[in-house]
Length: 279
Image 1 (cartoon, rainbow, N blue to C red):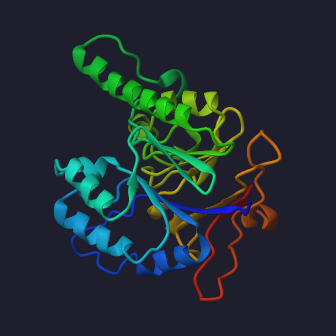
Image 2: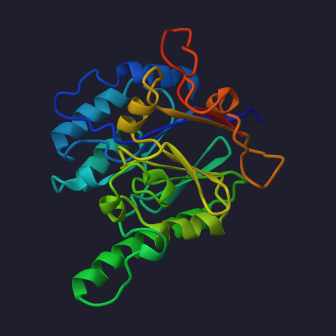
């Protein structure tokens, strides 16, 4: 079975005036990927008007698109309408569900805040605190349910909020608790996911690892633009649906082979190839 080329990006923040902004990026994705993952903050405010622009931008792609919402997509109070717009356009929007493309399983949630490690906020004290923690717990349970439904050897998770601290490093320490929650890592480990993609942390780190060594990628577009200015701001991952090893992908991307930080060569059409991984 041929490998599956995955493109992932988040925080595209489409506004009412974003017509054509994504066109060169999506054209490159169309030539180099079999599926596109959108990791939340698809719009600035989540308004129906922004949804129309987003759907029009995505309409040029003729490949499967899987998305989760981000916090910005809730701001206007119309997340249900935005999801309906996307689904009517053929986009698979995940919120505790799973989906399969060419033998690769995908599970997605928005996720929530709460902090990491010993600093993770606990459910104790005032009702407001308990309600806040419950939101993170509920998102974690949705992710577990979605992963449990998958029967594919390769499992990929997409979130908006970060499940580990490593990929928010670079942001001010004071806002770490608002950028993700370590509770989300638990089902990722339990179901031995191959790779994780998230956004949200515009000034974080492009990649980190779960406790079991599986790669976790921060694909917030503002971050990728800053870290890889000569490349298309999209992360590419190539997976074999029938892997020979069950220990997850080994990193063999171009930046690892050339040395971290070295720019990738320009593609034939003049666009950068983007940070890439093969597994």
